[in-house]
Image: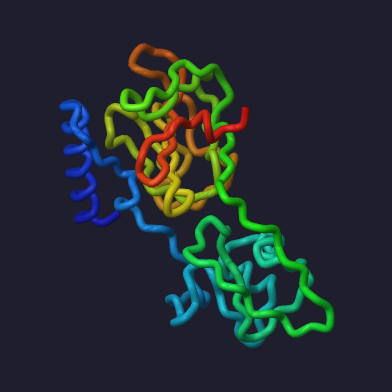
Length: 248
């Protein structure tokens, strides 16, 4: 983080804390305007090419599914699933492939078909809503109350791992918001963000890509010494009840 950006973030956090104490309408760093959606390269080591959406790559001569996956730090199996292919499927120059998880896509163009005598089976349909997983298994110490609270408090044991509720990218990891203690904020798409507060230790850094279930922190204690985490879900910038997004 540059000195200038660090100064801007520090000033924003100070303003945020003051607004919170005054009960004002507060803008938090996990709201949409604070972090742009992650963008993927469309050519290894280069900038996005004209006409290729973020999260996609246009195949060049000599490319293979394995070489493309390696260039983007992805598993060949994942790349195949995202594009309705098998790990042994051929790719052809000009073909458009998804190189990032579907939740990152800004648009969903139809991939250029691969020249073949056999039809390529379409991949699984995109889910209408991201399915979250429990970040921590434990008793619900505080529930969500619209207008009064922004999330839930889940009890645990000191040092228990706190896990990402869904695949996404870390847009904040730090201790700049005193009320939350060590805090991790993960952006899953342009509309959904989750936050994990009251950690004792953070296991990820800002900018990290994480997968569902990946440890992002360890359980800490609240101001009363109770081992727990504060878990929040924001949809379109507004707090929603996490229990309606978690499996029962």
